[in-house]
Image (cartoon, rainbow, N blue to C red):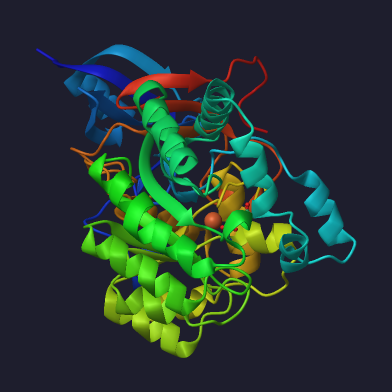
Length: 437
Ligand code: NIG
Ligand code: FE
């Protein structure tokens, strides 16, 4: 008598489990626990299937296909067609609630302008704020869900998502409400962050301290009271909030019981990483200009570095975060898209993995771990995610690549052929071309 399961995903060349407890650090970042253990087993010229069985939204078993089929009776089967099965990607830094794209700024930077020049001229975040405030709620909601569906098509099943293009009580609340609605209706889980401290809005330009006061005494308390966000974030950098302003925002957030995330030391070494570590922030993100003291502070604070190589690419910054030094320091490095209209219009974690290999000197295995298990550990979402092991959430990405090393090697098209969320197939590419080249 076979045990009943809901779904078996089989005929995979590899199941990349990234199995283990907690985040991976040091050499463990480079260990993916591939089934079958690194060697693709071949018989009669064919891949011996490896498979994943799922029931009630959770992973039940991982192993050779024949074994799983001998033990389990599946209501539905999904063939990986000789491709690779990975945990659904976790993207721990996104800004998906916005009204319009900003491709003209990308072109301006190619002509020599910098991100800071564009901000000073009233563009950048300010232009996204004007656009969001002028756009009806329904339109923003539709744009958001369409974008989230694209993220799912890229294999992403859990994200952290920020407000930050409203910069007043009403529109910050609106952005977080839209994220809560989308979380309930789309096949992607969303950990919400209030980023009211993204910029000082124009109406407060002459009295910055009054905006910090609005954030600390009105916006964050309202958001916390209404359960709209789990965390608060501050853009602490040149041309954004100073360390003192950021400290005021983060201390107020901490006192409210919110977790802390910080946009830290991307453009200049202002000491934001030191502040993040000192306050025990959950994550410090960007870190292109992090100092040695900043790295020590992250270690002391138990703060996860979230690296965003898409922004260095998009901003034409030739310097990148010191990923190797962060890994050597024993930090559980994570990767994210920073998906936003200004500095990283990149929805795909597969592309970010390739950029991390090419720009940050990470190995493919390290980058995969950073985009799944380590990213998941920064999301305060329930359940074990970002890995494939018994009891973990049944969130999978199926890719038409022959082995996982193709994730750094191949760029330029989306290799995701199917996505499983909570044990159900939520997206599948339909085309007749052979899955593998
Ligand atoms: O993470 N650095 C600040 N925030 C975003 C950019 C937002 C924008 O320019 O719209 C980032 O890169
Ligand atoms: Fe960001």
